[in-house]
Image (tube, rainbow over all chains, first blue to last red; front, side, top):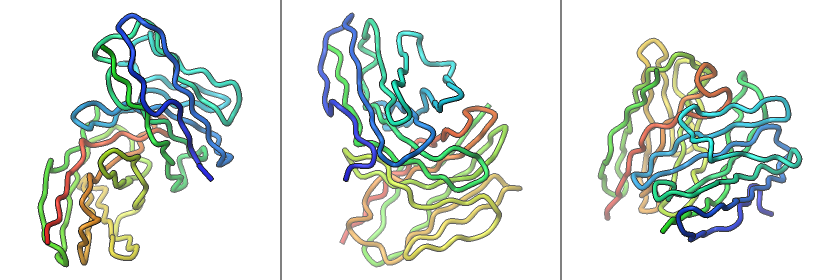
Length: 115
Length: 112
């Protein structure tokens, strides 16, 4: 049973296109995240979202938007793709709360290549 | 601001012990996590520290000193399969809510 799944695993597209990456978790978690891992393997938070609050990393361009149809899904939509968007995008989920050791579970990643 | 530093690369031999250090400066602190990431795969959780001291879990241990902004991950009885990137991450509610702020990772190569 896959805990956090993402589709597609690979995505190759041209500059200027709009694309979406889907994420689903079956862990019953309250909070989901999108991270970007660049070519130097640096993993950086883009968004965190639960049913009450969306926290956006201020460095994320507004071409990126998370969309959550329900608690188990958090999709990432990207408009007007640029070369610099090429990276691996990881979805993750966890229980809510700061006072506990709620580790995050990561999906397998989506490797996006913009040509 | 926030800053998490760890060595870029380390090498060790099978059976040895290796310590990966991490120093952090963040505006808030709600725990420090260590993750392991094999090439081409997702990060997987190794350990969590929120109070000072040592947490032991099998061959892996993690230490935290909040006053020094310092943590280390200790790997004992190294195996070839331990070759991976090790990511130090801080949960800083002032910066990112419950999300994690990662260091740039330490690539560990284990040789026979």
